[in-house]
Amino acid sequence: MNETLKLNNLTKKYYNKVALQNVNLTFERGKIYGLLGPNGSGKTTLMKIIAGLHKQTSGEILINDKPLSFETKAFVSYLPTDNFLYDSFKVKDIIKFYSDMYSDFNKDFALEVLQNNVDIELKVSKLSSGMIGKLKVALSLSRNADIYLLDEPLNGVDVLARDAIMDLIVKAYNENKIIIISSHLVSETEKIFDSAIFIKDGNIELNGDAEELRQSYGKSIENIYKEIYNHA
Amino acid sequence: MEFNNNIPIYMQVIHRIKQDIVTGKLKQGDKLPSSRDYSYELGINFNTVARVYKELEMEDIVFTKRGLGTFITESSEKVESIRHEMAKELIDNYISGMKQLGFMRNDMIEFVKENKYNSNEGNMKNE
Image (cartoon, rainbow over all chains, first blue to last red; front, top):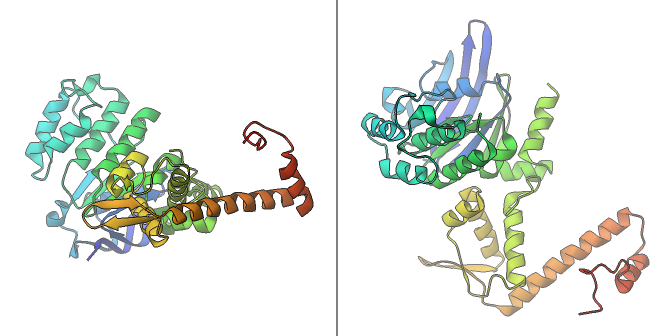
C-alpha cells in the first residue's frame, strides 16, 4: 500500500493541556506534506510522537502497517529544531559519526549535496547559521528512510540558505519517501508541497491537495494560512 | 521561473511551456527534461511536474516515447491551435478587464484599431 503512515484518533495531553486532539491523518509515499501552523499549534508534538520521542495519550500510529515501535523507528528520519551538532566536531567528523550511527546513511549523497554548500573541514563552531541549517537538513535527508520529519528546517536561516535547503529537499525526493515539513514560513515552502495540513490548537483545521486548495480558494497556501490563523 | 502562488503551479508551468512552443523557444519534436530534472530545475514538487506532462499529453501537446522521454508535438497545426488558444485567452482577459472599466464592445474595438496608447510593445503599425 501507499499509505505508509497512518494516524488514528491521536490525542496527546500534557497534564490537562491538550496538545493534539483526535488527529486522523494518512500519508502516502511519494508525497511531500506541509505541516502548517503558528508556534504552539501542535506541529512539533505531532512530529515527536511520530518519531517515537513522545508517547501519545491515546490513539494509534501505524508505520508500514505496524504500530510504532523500536522496529519502525528505523524507518523514520527526524530533524529536530534544536541545534544538536557538537561545536568541536568538524563537519566531516559528523558525517563519519552519522555513517557509523545509521546503517541507512548515504555518505556519498551527503558529500555531494554539501559540496558547494559547506566546507567539510570546518568545525561546527565556525559555521554560519545558514550553513548549520543546510548541514542539518542534508544529514537528515542522507538517510535512506521511508519517512522524513523536518521540523522547521528554515528557522534562523537567511534567504539564500533557505533556497538551498528547499533545493536539497527537492533533490532528495523520490517516489518511495514521505517527507513532512513543518513550517510557519509558508511562502518559502509551499511550492514543493503536494499536500498542506493546517493544524490549529491541536486540531486539524484543513487538509488537502495544495493545488486543489489554491484552485478552490483562489489564493496561495500562505493566504489560506493567514485566513485560518488571523481569526484566532 | 517566478511563480504566483495564488494560482495552481501546474497551470503556470503549462502556460509557460505553451508559450515557449508558440514563440519557438521549444521546437517541434524537442525533448523535455525528465519530471525529476524539471522539478529540480524549477524548484517545485515532482508530482506537479508529472501532472503538467500528463495534462499536456492529454491535450496532445506532448507525447511520450517509452523509455526515451517526453517530446513536444510534431504537428504544426497543434502549435497553431495553441497560438490561437493563447490569443483567445488574452482577448478574453482584455474584454473582461475593459468591461470592468465600463467600456462597451465598440469602444474596445476602437481602442485596438487606433492602438490608442501607442506604446512600443503594442504598436502594430510597424509590423
